[in-house]
Image (tube, rainbow, N blue to C red):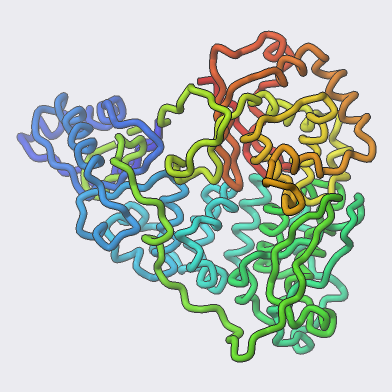
Length: 532
């Protein structure tokens, strides 16, 4: 049985008793189980079986209590001990999907009791099953694929996904993000695509550099930081192959999402795909380089590291995946009650960890970071994120379509705030410097506030500033940028800003400046504001 909030799915229920009692329980138990006091937090627990006794009215509460007891002693699903445990506990939905991806790639999913509730998925071919699983929450894909526990499984993932499976994932991404038009254009075969027989076996060459200044018609230079993502591309794949386009989408999503939402999105995506399978004849200067990551200089231009000569005897194939989940996964604290409950064999169903309301001027300690968050910190400038609604104004639609700079969404947000005389505190400045991919190597003492000053000004800030003042007014903007304590939790795909209910401001509320933005295609993230 699966339950997450109001979502309740019951697998197999065995009832024993007199015929009238069993018949009564069949009629009343499903609704009663849904109303039972199930544990509540973000975790997902899979329970092998729950056995309780009593009358039909007593069974739901007793089942919930028994499940809570098992949840508190649940094993880590990534560990070998999980197969002998009565219950396993996933940190959240991403941890759940990552573990299932790992087991599908290892071929062990069908043998593990904790995946019995996914029998329909496991019955499908591996590529099809993976595609369905990745498409379940397409907006979280960047975070899912960057989970440390999946790092060694990525080569196997890209080898397993075939073209139809990659197309399924692309469709899910396009539907969820609004980037479908760009994806459709990139999937169209190009007239100048090189035939398979002309493609060189040197498919691991780094992409030739693209222009390093960015206008509406120029593309950002993007490259994968992990050779595992590119080493499995077949040498004869055209740029329009769904597997190539999928990797190109992920590359732009993490480094330049605004280009996928821009007016030139289709061509930008096609150009990025071409760099992933460029024949050796077109990339002779890059053939001796390893796949590389990009950084940005003070002017916001992409800067690739200096070429590194290849080492003799280095194999050209990816190393086999090994299970390092125990080394990479953070140790579990004493488990708290869990919200979603998965039960393999018996009746058991239903249902955020309280966030601290204390605001400090320093970032949260990494030792207490929840596993789902790459960044978790407190700031006195939480209202800064309300400016995301300014950049998302319909009046700025055409302006957003011209953004082609890497990390353009975050950079324009910092520029807007700077034009409104907002000065972030150190924790917020550190987050923004990283989000803008600013290089701190020239800054003494690695001061994040000083790093932000290296971001060059906008060529013409007037359109954004005028739209902000015209739509929201000076009072609302000033109230938003006043001291406003908040806790910020961010992953590669989501940003959650938790504010105090006592700090609700009528000037802000009336203008809608603190409305939940949700998915922002030009930022590449789902943004939520929470008043706790």
